Length: 459
Image 1 (cartoon, one colour):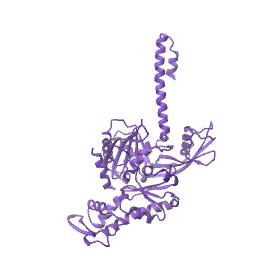
Image 2 (cartoon, helix red, strand yellow):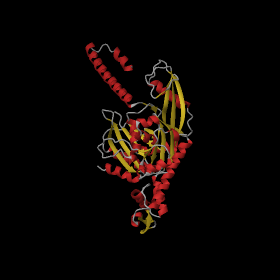
Image 3 (cartoon, one colour):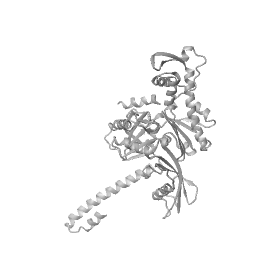
Image 4 (cartoon, one colour):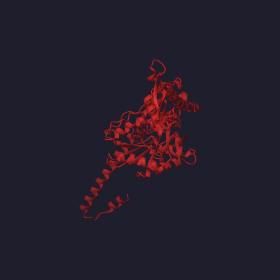
């Protein structure tokens, strides 16, 4: 059984989860860990030593809860150093029945036909659709009859140096073999339902230091974008504008951050102001109107949403989001963000979404918006609705049901070999050890919950 170690390299927190399938193919959590993220900013490693220590501490924390060995490690990569490219491929089907061999070959051909940007490495090759003998587009051509198979793919690439730095940081934890997953792709897998995927949706992950978004349709991402602005910028704005220390600004954001409350009417004066310490002289305080605080927060959040809108409009995607805009991530805890998004994205449906809960014994709430990426990594590795694609090692990723079926077949084959060996041993004894020809031929042939709770303060 494949045990997965998922690592979300966030700029505020590094989250780790060890998981596997239970007997019903559901995700079973074996261990969890979280540490404050050091050495990482806006998705980039800026200090390998600090990042390595934070990662190792988070991994060790997850491993304390289980004795099972990790088989595969999946790590999130930022859109800050990623881009996508479309390509096509086609292959002949020799025996007229499409198997996994042809599905793998046609995606490898699409990758071969693509122009990979120098100094970039492939992270995903995700089919947007297949075609069999120039017929209509199909999602899964397995076992279909035809003579020719075509595919249109979206190839996600990331800078080689950024990926190498991540690998170097992971070596401290004894991790060598890694599969990379685009952060925003993982978020989309975590929060979208099948109907939203079918009609197309934009998932916007509003993080602490960056905002990442993808346009997702069918089983593939069609476009991914990145904006180097997040909720930490709200804290910085408040600190500068109010001349107050960052820690005080963060508390103001958490306690009074609202985009819709009316602080200018029907309130007593003392209810509309808050005392803040002065930067450089924290013994003295200033009184700041809550309406001024709201204006500062509103301006920054609106800026982020407008930037997302402009990028979608530039790529002609704004009018094709059948299921609308889906907001997730820590910044969505701001009161009134859905209303502001409705004003920015005029006429487009807006929803705020979080992953579905995963039952576990670690008091970890996976159904929180800030858990979208880590849950998405689990869905990518263990999710029941996984589709055919190529991973960052350019190997075929199978749907879960198919993969489990292959595992059962392999186990049966191993059992048969054991039985054959036992039979051979018996025959040797019966033959008195004289007839060995067939043998020669055969030989050839409790603190985790509190830490996760704390993350809500870091959005």
